[in-house]
Length: 194
Image 1 (cartoon, rainbow, N blue to C red):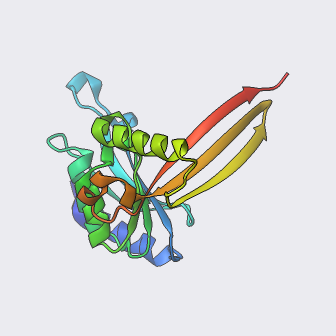
Image 2 (cartoon, rainbow, N blue to C red):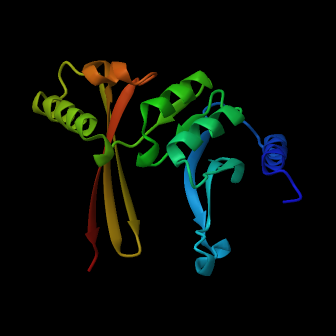
């Protein structure tokens, strides 16, 4: 095209950084989106896939990178992290980007992370479940733990959430994840009103 994509992307990042009111512990959510409106199905072209960094507090995209057809979000997120000023920020992603390389890149950028553990890391998921099972069995005695409960009543639906956090020192595999300090769990229970 007429405009260099990388140069334009850096311009947008600099502009968003100027607008951004950066605070300590700012939450930056990184997630991929496919822009299907620009897909050309007849030509066999899929929509443009972008990985975005969203500042939750500021309500703006502070950066994005194209995820090319010969790459994926797991490699693209490492580039995006390097492009942004994330010092003191808390980075969140979806389960796809729960990777040791992502954790290391965030720590290198002087940030922190909250990464969901799902089926893509079966061994880690089983270890976390086992840790929470053991802690509950012992009524959390001998564990550095914290809990918080919330209740939301909205549109005839009541949602109870129990948040539990344990020190990662009790999880042997934590040493493989740079910067892992704690593991958390959310138990949701929904009931529907009459």
